[in-house]
Length: 234
Image (cartoon, rainbow, N blue to C red; front, side):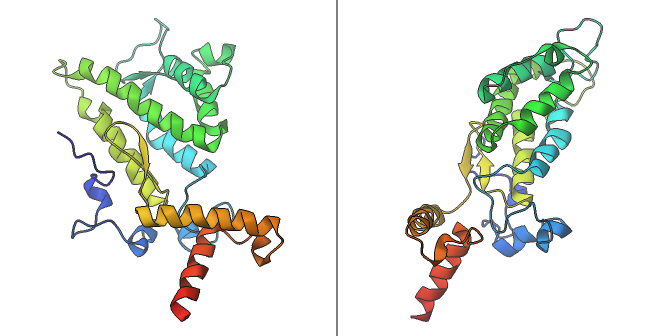
């Protein structure tokens, strides 16, 4: 049975088997993110956001490798890809409460329709879509077991999808991990989850009462760091 830990992917662990440290994960970031030059990337771990560059990478490097034009006898799925674009988009449009149109069902433009769904939904709906894609892969996986031919079906499995998704999330310090049930769980230790929620409440309360924390530039993560520093200095 696959390990159910949210850190079961070997690539997400350090050599001693422990969770990667902040410095280790920072080394995975690209230049502009690693050095804080990209104004579109917030500082610290990303929890309640799904930036466009994350959606683009997911769509290009993961999802587009699994989909084919379906419901059209003129188009052959010669690579035996597992997910039909139109059916998948229909499922994701239900998840994101988006109304499909004629272009979503047209074989020439359906891939653009799928991309639109992924890129223009709310941040939390994007993660709903990530989970839904995993569910769809799980549902078709039995049809690939012992299938004849020379296609490497292992790259179409849920485990392969999960590994790719978690690698992207870890690389960009997105603090969610896809588990074996295709559910995203927080990669933060419980103590940090508690601290984050407490800091959010403090920031909201402080803003309402006009304290020094009302500055928009002060994030929850910065407040946690400031609080820990003050505690150590006492």
